[in-house]
Length: 478
Image (tube, rainbow, N blue to C red; front, side):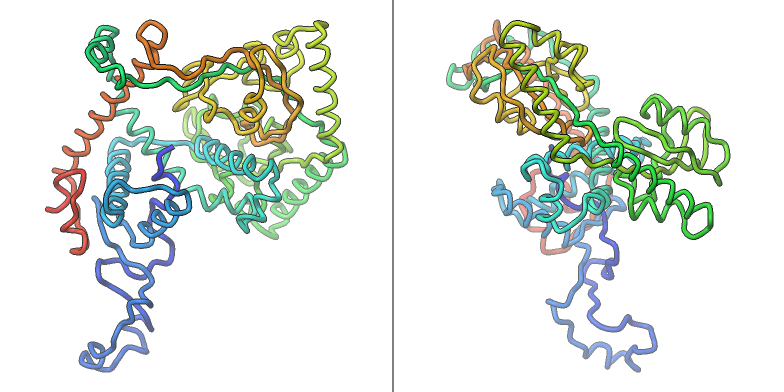
């Protein structure tokens, strides 16, 4: 994940200073409280500490705010990140580069769906939940926000991140390297310069999702029926309820997912959504792997549909979790005793839809594509990495809890299928790793060249304080 993705990429709401050097510290000029003459106005001194915000760079038609830079600086300090150069220059330049990609994405009509944004946000929140000992409640307590509030706050930044990623993929999609080019790149490289391949592991997993009680399912369904009644009675709007209560990333948009093709939606959700014909009517309750939904039609355009929805996720109890864990403990003992193989158990017993068709082998997904079954330890889900760390090849873990890719708490056992310890890369054993290195460098160079060229034809204006910086790219100062 690019570090830029952690920070605000858009102008903050409520900004009063929209041009470099402007500041407002009292009543807005031009109103009833404005000074009677210009001399009096000029005599008012502005306290720098009272400046709310200011635009310090403009790239195309995208502003970079002083608050954006400070937010990025504070986040980096919190994560212990060191800048390669003066952060007062490096940070705004990195933000400006992202603006160039966003500007081009708009020109090329690059689109991301709400489902893609939602999935990306859910992945981040799930990572945070893992760090908070697998507890949603502890995460909410630590961040002093509900999960829904986190999703809403993250939406715009993650939309920008997805747009930038798609734009970069579009720019480098035709770049490739041949085996001969890979061999030539490393042929005369000194041995101590050849990259080290980190320890790589292959992992098989079996999960059991705790069964939600009937009482909890009824509670969720009754809540959704109540929302439907409130909308139908005219008490409130569907969008308002979605903003307040939906547990999906689309809550910030009043539950609106944007025009989306059927193939990218959950099949059950899509079946109901595409059968809606009256925007004034609300669908029946729909159950998907993500939870329970109600849906309201907004519009249809050919093969795409735009709807609002409210998602509620049933909560599982500690008793439900313990029961699932005990089931896995029994299954693990049966596997160790040879009563059943791990491969068969993963295929016929596991609830993990992503791995059960592959005997439980986890897939390393990079940029939305399955690249390999091999993982660096740091690329595994946190709880899986902890379980695997002490295992020998062929050994099974004890049951543990984790949050799956769909944001649900599950119990799991894992088997360490293979491990290759860290070593100096060789063409014969690590060709794919070396190819990825060469391909990555080619793509990086292409993107650097694109930025340099793009700069020549893009309007850039910056505060005078930045004009003496030593930037990575020439051409910011016009």
